Length: 110
Length: 114
Image 1: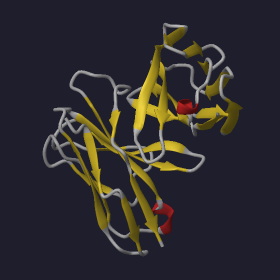
Image 2 (image 1 turned 90 degrees about the horizontal axis):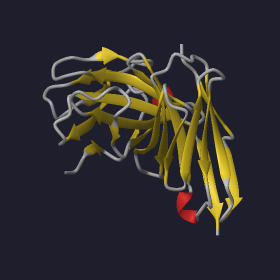
Image 3 (image 1 turned 30 degrees about the vertical axis):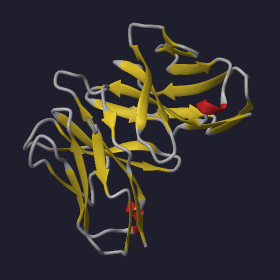
């Protein structure tokens, strides 16, 4: 059974700082790894999806990497802004299921 | 397009009461999903429906029933609510031909069972 873990559970940084969110998964037989953003009272929005054959994906100030052999993915956020404050979840696709991590609650202080 | 909509947004129940959470999508998607999100546990799949008239159990189906009466709507029913079902419930849908990872989420229903 796939298990996905995210560290840290919460993170508070000053505006402008670069930061890394971590995600680990137990079963390396994944199709892809996806990062979502969740704002309070809202649903989830997909940010980046890395196929199992890829090593990383970039979108603007976001960069996600995938290392299947070690069962790890990271989300790098450059030059963080207060608008980046949200909960970030990673999810691994294996079989016909998405398995989610617990999320990291990010606060970027002005 | 409204995307995926859920009603109600908030609900408080007493133990033993029943209720139905409603979900609708206007994107002509085939697959629909129900998840629950608990603090410190991420989202867990309750039930899913690959197409109209079909439903399958997910990771945590006990205490729930679902109905997929048409392509647009997928409802989740709690027959006898328990405090352990206090959670935030999310509905999601996937376009035709898309893999499981392409899911569009609704805003959620926050349910409290006293």
